[in-house]
Image 1 (cartoon, rainbow, N blue to C red):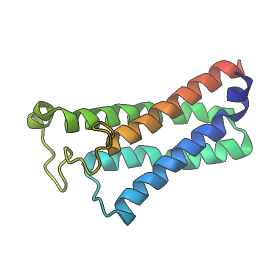
Image 2 (cartoon, one colour):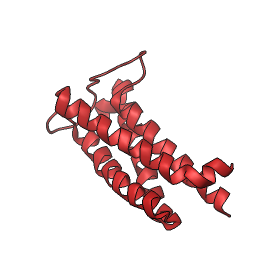
Image 3 (cartoon, helix red, strand yellow):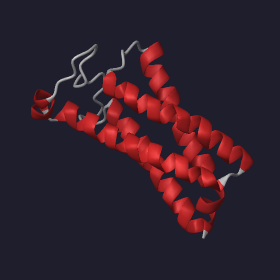
Length: 138
């Protein structure tokens, strides 16, 4: 548990940076156009890269009160987006009306790993690291 206490900010920052660079790779290099829910996930993830980077650099433990709400909300949005992709009846209730439909699966690795799944995994990892860091710091 000592490693978690000492390096949880760096680990969370690394997860946020990889998620940010991954989303930029998919849109800018692979040419995948983000849907509306993807943009919400980006709005929640991109600041985490900056906040966690600065917090890790200055060893600021107080960033948790900013990081946890963003990461938790991002996990909720990603989960909803993933269910919208995988459960056709959910998309029929409220379809996306502008731009790219939210149920489009640009990638579908192993039959279940989609872009919202990857984003949700990152948000959940960041949340877990923040919670474990909090418990360890006491």
